Image (tube, rainbow, N blue to C red; front, side, top):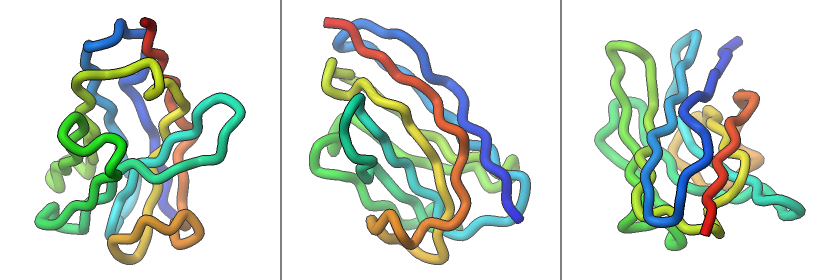
Length: 119
């Protein structure tokens, strides 16, 4: 069983930046970030493969968000720049066997971290 712990969320003004971290307790393959805005469905944000050589970024955040991983410390990062109020959501990391945007393919999930962007 893999445990995931997210951190780095908070309150930031529009145009600001945050870096989220996802620390895994065990070995992981692909790790993805999802978000759930208030009153909406959970949606895909970004995913990175096991060795960090391949990524997929949602169109809504491409050019502003970057996903990376440090295998030495078993951590995946989501660098978020140029934040907008519509980025306000709970952000979750999760693991999957391969790179995919499909929520149902992800098996282990973290507890989430709140990101709030004020206008």
